[in-house]
Image (cartoon, rainbow, N blue to C red; front, side, top):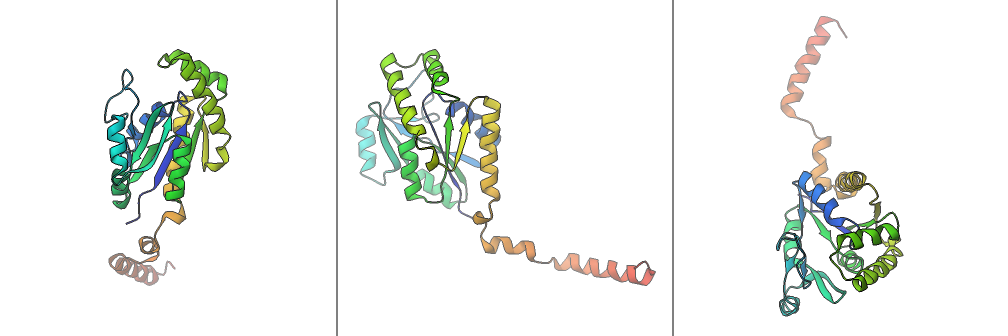
Length: 223
């Protein structure tokens, strides 16, 4: 059994990661989404344990003293982290895992898991991203300004990612993320030689039937 593939989706707040991810996860039952921990306040419509595990800073820091996080970072005064135990359990079971992680965390994951697949979701331009953040209405103007500056900085690192998807048209972005997942699953580098050996083997029962068919063809003179 092959080890699961670790996919890491990263992108600025407001770029549409949540919407794209939900659509892909709904259609792919073989893809496990690792729910991150965060100390930020829960937004309207978010579900604890589904969108994030919303915890106190004390709880977060206590977890760091144990098996900890695959990655963790602080952004706009809040802590975010990917629980290591849950991810490793799925990968060892051969299940593919998708993370939603900011840029610094994504690069940290890559250092710990070299074969992780990093995907950056970007807006058509920063003006469109600003528009989305303002219309969302969940952040103060000062916070939106910091998010835009962070987005500009993050996109300077696009070459550190394996794939870049532009979320201009939602349906296109969803389809392109699905394509990345499919391509990685079909990569020859992901196939263990022992698992592939079956494709160059022969089926003894079928071979007997084919031998009989071949004999009948020769006797009939059709050959």
